[in-house]
Image 1 (cartoon, rainbow, N blue to C red):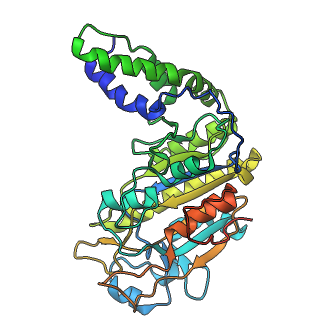
Image 2 (cartoon, rainbow, N blue to C red):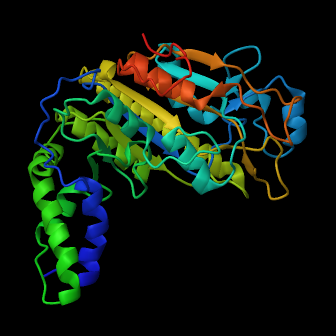
Image 3 (cartoon, one colour):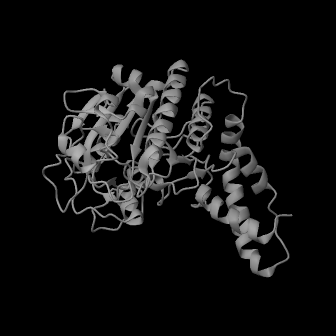
Length: 391
C-alpha cells in the first residue's frame, strides 16, 4: 500500500492530469474551430538563454570588446549573412536552415521587462503585460476563446518536472509524464484509501482524479509504450529523453495540440563556457533527430518546434566569465510548414537601455503567428500582427 507521503506526492501530479474533474474522453458537442490536428512542441530554455552567443554579430567589434573571454571567435561562427552567424554548436541544425524549415526571430522581448525568473516566465507563459497578472497560460486562453471540440487525447502533455506553463489553468487537460509514463500509471493505480482519517479527503480526491484520468491515460500510455520503431538518434540527456518520448507519442498516433519540453541550466552567471555551448548543442542535436524522424514518418508538416525563455542575458560579460539577466534574445521555430529565415532585427549594441538590449519584436507576435497561421484561430486577445512564420 502506498504511504501517505507518496500519495500526497501523487496528489500533486494527478490534479495536473485531470484537475478539472472532467473525463478526458467525454467530448463536448460544440463544433471544432482551428487546426487541432497540428502539434506545437514547446521547448523552454529555462534560466534565460544568452542570445548574443547564440546568434553572433561577428562583424561588430563592440561584441568582442564587451565580451573579451566569452565572444565566439570569428573563424568559429557559422556565418549566414554579412553580419550574423550561428554558434558552432548549431551545426546539426544546418540542414533544417538550408531547407528553409528553421525560423530565427531576432530581438524578441517586451516593454518594461521583468528580470525575475519567476515573474519573467509567468509573463511569457500567460502572454500578459509586465504590469498585469494572468493565471491562465496563453494557449489555455486560446482554448477558452476558440472552444475546440477536444476530440484529442489531452490539451497538453508535459514531459518535464517543470510547470506546463502556456497550457496551465482554466479547463485545460494536461497530462504530466515527468517519469517513464508506464511507471507513473502503475504507481498511481496502486493508490488505495488508508486508515489515517486525515488522509481520507485527500485520498478520495486522488481516487476521483484517477478515475477521470484512466480512460485517456490508459489509451495514451498504451500507445506511448508500444514497440514503436523510432530509429532516431536522440541523446541520452534529459532533453533527448523528452524529445524521444514526444516522438513516440506522435508516431503512435496520439493527438495532442501541445507537448511541453524543458531544458535547464541556461542561467549562466558564472563559467558560461563550455556549458552554454553544450546546452545549445543538446538542443540542436535533438531537434535535428526529432525532425528527421518526423520527416521519415510523414509527420513533419503537422509539427512545429518552438523555443521560449523567461528573458535573455546582458550584452556585457561579468567578472565571473558569465552573463547576468537581460532583456532580449532570439527564438526559434522548426517545422515542415515553417517559412525559414531571419525575422525581426538584431538589437544593436550601440543603442542600449540601462545597459540592456532593446527589443525589436514583441514575443506576442510569435504567439499570434502560432495561433492564427498555424492553428487557424482568430485569437482576438492578441492585438499584435503575425510575423508570417508559416506557409
